[in-house]
Image 1 (tube, rainbow, N blue to C red):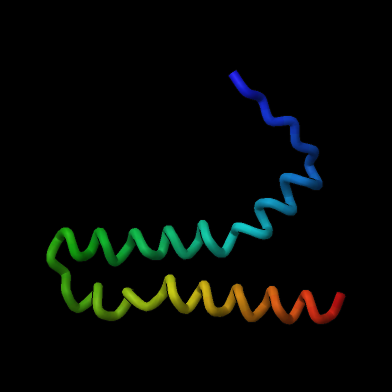
Image 2 (cartoon, rainbow, N blue to C red; image 1 turned 180 degrees about the horizontal axis):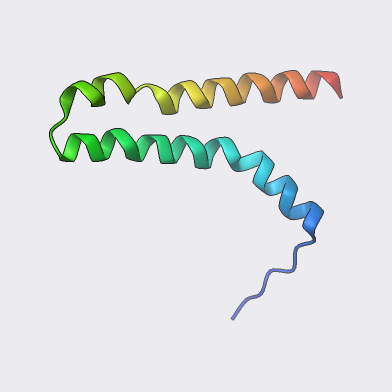
Length: 68
């Protein structure tokens, strides 16, 4: 069994770095679920959310890196 020993600061950095990915993945599950129950209009409306979240996270990361 492998144990990962992370400090609280390291865990916060990882969560902050990957939070947009987790959020976008959860937003991807929503239209997928709506598609399974055949709610096509809702899928067409919410299907673009994950891509938009990824684009905003890329832009904010680039802005933060320029300031450092």
